[in-house]
Amino acid sequence: MIDNFGRKIEYMRISVTDRCNLKCRYCMPHGIKKIPMRDILTYEEIISIAEAAVDLGINRFKLTGGEPLARKDIGTLVEGLKGIPGTEEVTLTTNGVMLMDHLDELIEAGLNGVNISIQSTDSDRYGGITGGGDLEKVLRAIVAASRSPLKVKLNCVLHRDIEDEDVTGLIELASANNVDIRFIEMMPIGMGKSWRGMDREKVVRVIEDEFGKLEPLDGRRGNGPARYYGLPGKDIAVGFILALSEGFCEECNRVRLDSKGKLRPCLGYSEGTDLKPYLKAGKAELREAMRKAVLEKPERHCFSERDTSDNMISIGG
Ligand code: SAM
Ligand code: SF4
Image 1 (cartoon, rainbow, N blue to C red):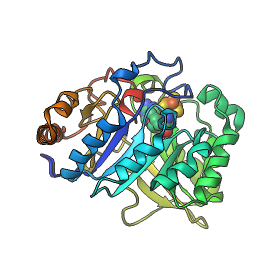
Image 2: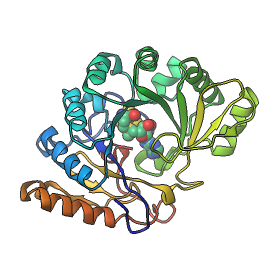
Image 3: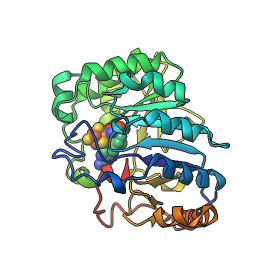
């Protein structure tokens, strides 16, 4: 559907859990006070919301969290979403540690793609930033996923401890597996407020010193706000998602459903519409509540003017 600023809203990020198997230092270093399971949307509730979303023209879904693979039987949800007539795409974003265990199930369920978050190719540095994550498992999953029918992308958040070698190592990793990679500017949400790292100029310098000039790629790639570039002699695209320094609000095409059922029109604001009461009220009421919520989507995020009280876990990235 078209929002009040003429943007076509066609994409919904769905946070399926607040739980995670890692403790990334820039995200949830001390863990979290868990939301009771009874307050978290069931798969049936998520499917009902997704059906209403498809009716509104929002037909691309990304599962996130917390760690979406920490939620039991995630393949069942993927299958349910894919089974909604009109669904265009279901993808998932993961830290990758448990991906090998779920890959076959996800492919069988019809998943279209996976984004894997990885911050370093050095196992000590990776373990340090993720609070003990096992890099080997992630690397195995990247190799297996990139050889599967899934569309695979790597995501690296530019946190304050990132080193030049992390940036170049991740580009080598992406290139070796023939997958695209995106560098994401740290957003001032949760711990991110004090973890802003390398800026765009520095990342570009590090990449170009090692691999040659980044050339802008024409045409749209993926659903997101990334701007993509090519590198000499490499078949991959390098993307930048720069919410603060460049902004992406004009092209924003998404809304977010948090794990408790709040539909959030913008990741910069805590405000949203609790859909749970409308789930009980009926299909037409649910669809109308969602339509109204989308029309409340602000023109732009508010990162430079005010803080959000949220953390990334509750929003889902
Ligand atoms: N656990 C999964 C993962 O790590 O991919 C999915 C949830 S995680 C919250 C989604 C994405 O948000 C990850 O790529 C993570 O690195 C990123 N992220 C976390 N905190 C962030 C922040 N303050 N700014 C920008 N991205 C952030
Ligand atoms: Fe977990 Fe993802 Fe947050 Fe890391 S970024 S702690 S993997 S939710």
